[in-house]
Length: 313
Image 1 (spheres, rainbow, N blue to C red):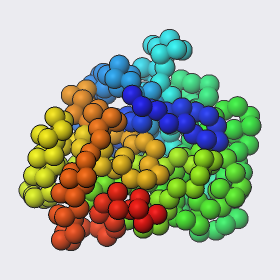
Image 2 (image 1 turned 60 degrees about the vertical axis):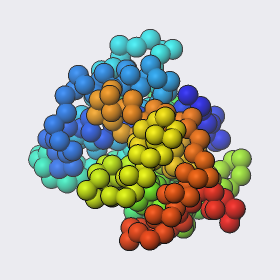
Image 3 (image 1 turned 60 degrees about the horizontal axis):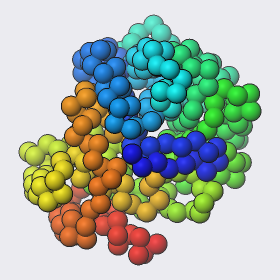
């Protein structure tokens, strides 16, 4: 599995990371349907066998349950076999009702508490990558929170830090203060808006851009919704001796500046359909076939061809 390195911390991650949103189960406000914990854990083990060396999660998934599921696996592994873990902070919940939507929290003290609780659920002394959700436009509040994260790094509780879907203002502030290792951006064939703004190549010390929702939360593979586009993915997959999920993820990975991608999976078989993406090289014909369809589609705005985007940049 190809890897990339977070320039600020030196953490090396496989080009694909395992996404675990489904592992939170159905019993919370953001639930994505029932999920068997044993199947989730089998999926983690399959990812490790396939060469994926990091798991992407969030404290809010299942209100901590996804982290608990991951932690049960991590505790059974020898240190040399353990995957690196990225989790996210910034959402809080009161514990009284699992159906009450979590709310964003900008309190640095709560961020510290969230990280401590995540460490306990995950069964690790140090979290490899902590991602911050933040939507408050206040510069002072953001800088307080980012400084808190840097203090946590200095205390040895986390190795690297990143931002989830930041706007350019918050990204620039984080880079100015220092210590931003990764930027998680939504990027799929159906949603290319990030290519109009935050996605860019900033040089060797820049944060690593990591794509998520490369299948547009499953919409991309629903033929009744995407029609000709899904047919094109099937055709390209046949040419590449791969599958449509892998082709769609490889398309997102082809964008200049994208270092890796998070691939969500409910079960080992689901994960196997996308593993080819890390090493799948699409051709000019493949890109053109997709671009020609997007040029006439009514979906999200944005560039339609990674290669043309690279030339423009």
